[in-house]
Length: 126
Image (cartoon, rainbow, N blue to C red; front, side, top):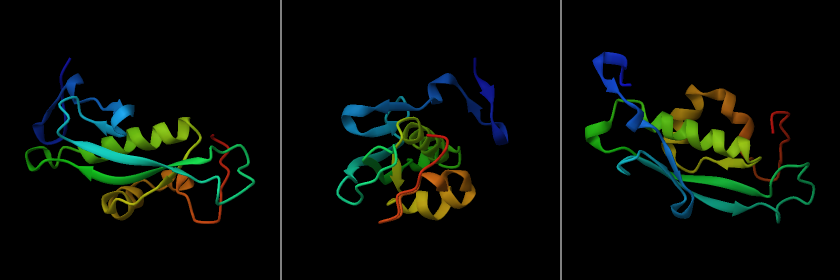
């Protein structure tokens, strides 16, 4: 069932976010908007991971085409990627400027997942 979003924009189930593991992307079903990441091995940076995965998601790029901007897609892509990282016990490296400069300041609860070089952090929610 489609539902009205803000400013009268119609949102439908087709607007859901899809994880494409083989492409290392989170994207809209049409593939036009996406968040690209790479996996980084952190095992060389700390011998005591405290139950945290030795991998981190380096979120390198978020793209939303001009025709779909202003609908909150970039934030929804980030929500999906950060939720995925949390559920897999991974840290996040916010290389993408949208994530570091816009998304994280608006969503500070996710800061607990952000990897700080040489400072592995344990989270009770992992």
